[in-house]
Length: 208
Image 1 (cartoon, rainbow, N blue to C red):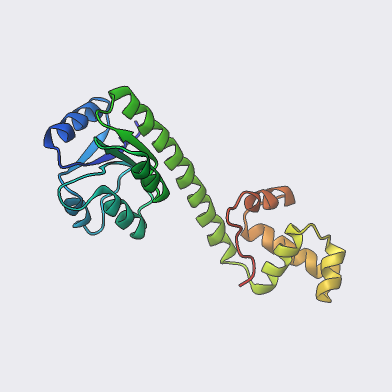
Image 2: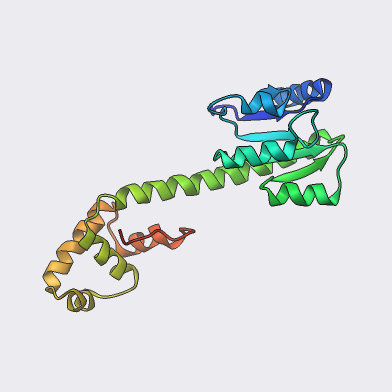
């Protein structure tokens, strides 16, 4: 059975926070509740959450400040902003600051659950891309400087003879370098090697 997803709720309205937490727990989510932005940000490190529901207006530290602080501390968790005093300016600022979505209170249960599922789906996609990128970077770290040069040439579509001529080496030597690159990058075909780098955004730096 997969681990339950963890949703954080940061809201100084006790009744609303408890009500939302009850709904989410009924849907088999783990829930972390915080009565203020300060209560959340006082934790070091911040707890792992798959999604956060953050009130825009709270008595002390406002939601936008909490959002900015989370992002500055490297928290990439999708954050859903909620408020009883929504306006276009607030929504624009929240989204510009990296909020996933902006909902007005009272939030309907099904609407909130739909947005949470969308946020979790996006978060999973981003996490998968980050994990893939880290995996490729770790493989690249094992390459020598010359092997990186050969890798770059291969990805540019150059053939062995062209690479050999550029480097002043024999075709056989280039074949050896290419074989080492393939082994260290854990691929068996050039097409697999190209696919590793095709969807990297931003592109990986091949030169050291």
